[in-house]
Each structure stands twice: as C-alpha cells, then as structure tokens.
Image (cartoon, rainbow, N blue to C red; front, side, top):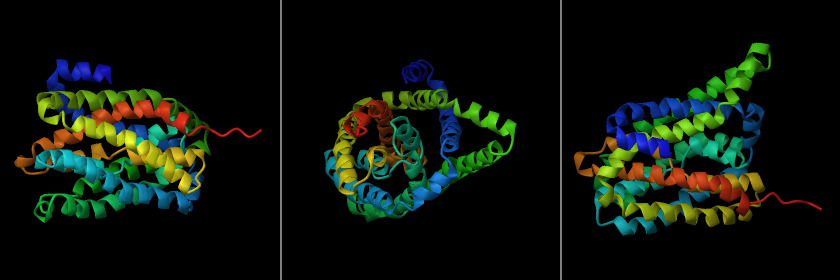
Length: 304
C-alpha cells in the first residue's frame, strides 16, 4: 500500500492504466481464492440457511440503518452523500473472500453467498437511494456495472477454478498447476493493494479537503461493524469461522464494483466517485488490521 501511494503520487499519469488493471488483477486473486475452496464445500454452504439469513439481515437491514445515521453528517453535500451511500450500502463480493480466508473465516460460505449478495444489492440499492436521497436521483443510476462485475469477478474466476480443480484431480500437470497457482495468494494480494492505491491516490489527493469529512465516517463504519457482526453471529449461534465471515461481510463494501457506477453519474456528482475511492483506501487499511484483530475478538474455543 505504501509503494502504491508513492508510485501514484510520484507519477499521476499511471492512474488510468492502473485503474484498468484493477479488474484483471482482482480476478486473478479471486481465481486463486476460489481454487482453494473445494466445490463440495460450496455446495454445503448453499444449505447453510442460518448463515445466509444472518448475512442478509446484517447487510440489508442493519447496515442501511447505520449508514443512514452516518450519512447525515454529509447530507448537506449531495455529491458526497451519494458517494457515501453508493459504497456503504453495497456489500463486497470479491476481496472480502480473500481477507476472510486470511483471518480463518468461512470463505467458502461467503463464496456461496456472493451471487445472493450481488442480486440483493442490485434490487435494494435503488430503493435505499430513493429513500435516502430522493426519487429524482434514481434515473441517473445505471446498474449495468453490477452485471459486468458479477461476470468478470465471480463467474469467470469460479469457472476457471473449477476447471483447474477438475484437471488437478486427474492429471499430474493439473496438480502441479494448482499447487503453483495457490502459492501466489499473498503476492497477488500485495499486487492488488498496490494497484488499487496507486491508481486512486492522486485523484483523492487533489480533492482531499472536500473528502476529509468522509474519512471518519468510513472509519466509524468499520469499527461499528465489528460488534454488530459479533452479536449477529452469536444470535444465530454460528461457529467461529462463520462468525468471522459475518464480521468481514458486514464491514467490507463493494467499492471496486460501484466505482464504474459512480463514474457514470452526471458531472454535478463529480465528487461521488472520489468519495467511493476514499472508502476503498480507508477500508484496505481496516482490512489489514481486521485480519489480525477479528481472530482475537472471535477466538477458537479450546475444549478441555
């Protein structure tokens, strides 16, 4: 992240090509992540009704209430308000799976829930924007980026991982490929963080005075979602891994998916994409901390 910030500030011209590289790099990271999840585990995860129900309640019932309260601090600026709402109302379906796995959470459960979370936010985001911003804003929103992201960041990496698992089970070359690819998880995570930061830091820096009001809101959201996720996990009687997954899903937002949506807004909302990007930068720092912190809050219970 530090390297990305230095590169992005020292050479702002790299921002656009690196922004184009975000989706391919993230797709590769998710391919490696999906490769580490046996497809039988994904099938079992679909039958985990308690986990899926709690995930939906946290992301589409509890989170909107919290976001509405936090967004009142920027309600005077409609562009900032729209940016904050776009990003905080949409649960992450991509690198949250990676961070959850790094923290010992149930990444296969989140992988199975990704299509449901994507569909839920596509259906409910216009409703929440109508309630929180007003009906006149809805006509300016194009939901096509959600479909593109679903295909490029979920369907394509998942299909590639499935083919690789099939080859690994039947051929020596397939096993060698699978082992080699899975060993690239950490370098790909580092590359993703560097590319995202380098591509966005200059744009945020130019509008930093206007965006400063959003930073404490994003930090507060991440902090609030830790106890929310813990209480939700205990209320649903989930085990340690699934509770960690609920915490990460509640705290991690779909910033890289809604960014194209924000960029497609009219010129009067020029601050909205930068508000989305600012959340990405705050969240990436928070997720690195969460990987260490969440296992301390949700420790593995030792039986005597």
